[in-house]
Length: 189
Image 1 (cartoon, rainbow, N blue to C red):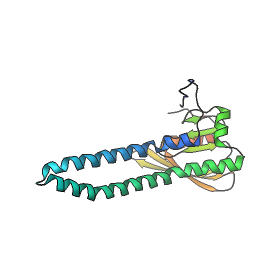
Image 2: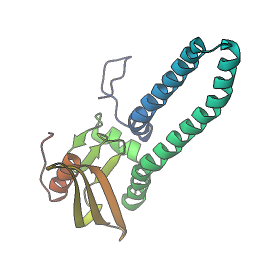
Image 3: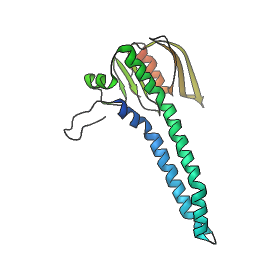
Image 4: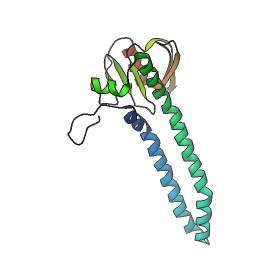
């Protein structure tokens, strides 16, 4: 839940706050990679005859690889997260609304929200935001198992503007989306 620190009131979610919430996983992963590399660069010279030369080689050799890895993490995260924001833009155009204004009007201040008109989830690394009426039909549901329980689900759906979309998320989130799409309000698990 977003809270305005100045007056203690709930703040509505925005596209920017959704983006930063979704990027949290990737930011933590980037920090972890940075700590790992710094640790390696610090420890390796203790096992060398010429520590300064080895440290220089390690830093010059590993640093470009780490920068490249972080670039791939950022680009990969943008690809994963951008789908949700393209869907928000489609819904804004279809319904003639602005997402930020709509969230302010209906006072939605949580990143996990299910109401009659809105389904919002940021439980996984992606962003799922749907306004009632945007998903017209669900054409296909696929589940991916790990052991005996489903871990990931994918649905193929048709939107109100006639597009076929693929929605992939945690199995429980997709289950809740399907219940919501059928007109019921699921409970959070």
